[in-house]
Image (cartoon, rainbow, N blue to C red; front, side, top):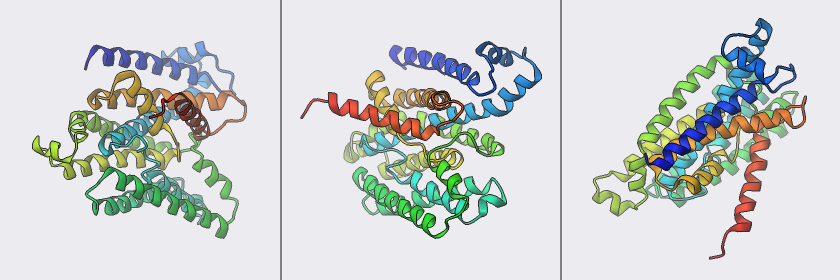
Length: 329
């Protein structure tokens, strides 16, 4: 890593700790920043420690892991497909997960056990990945064909979600709708450890593949002259990024713009070298999502705004700003 990347990582790590501490002190229980700091070092009362360790800390960990996974996946998708619009949403992964989770709510499986929602969401995401994989494989995994396949699948699954709402109207619709907006307030904490392991291993593998992605960005013919099996490597990287995306989306719902916006910002700050851009984007995503979740809990307290709403607003404003300030070509 160059000096700029090292400095950027240090700043992001410091910001991450600051956001975690602030987020621990935000809520309806009236726990101050200093009390939250005492809990971290084991010096607070039992009631305060219970609220922070059993309620707030798992939510923050989920936000950090989800932000890192979505940002790293978006960065990898953009690098491999050579398309700045590539992210988990445009590739259909989020749409498949949304359909699976909605099916679990509307068909009554969610009432049988909390693990059915993430299970159905994960299966829906995998089905979407499989369909996009098959469709784009016929075009040798070209960036445009994969993006187009993902957008088509997203529209199909979105229509299927609306169809489920129309046919199976019930009291579970509200819960399904909240999940679709990206919600970190309710998830199965027993699955958190498995998601953390999956994301950490997956993001580490993606970070190590940065130089290979740089070579892939040269184009098929040039990368083949360097001894790279372009199609095989693209498959492996695509499936790895899809797996970690599916794992986090299955727990916390559809959270848009993180995988699209964070890599754009970090590319402007840190440069386009994927060997450093992927880990920096993962760190930035780990900072960005818990920050958005904290804002969602602060803005209209005691009402908590789903984190997906905050990220969509931030992402929309960001790209409007880019559009207004970009030079015409």
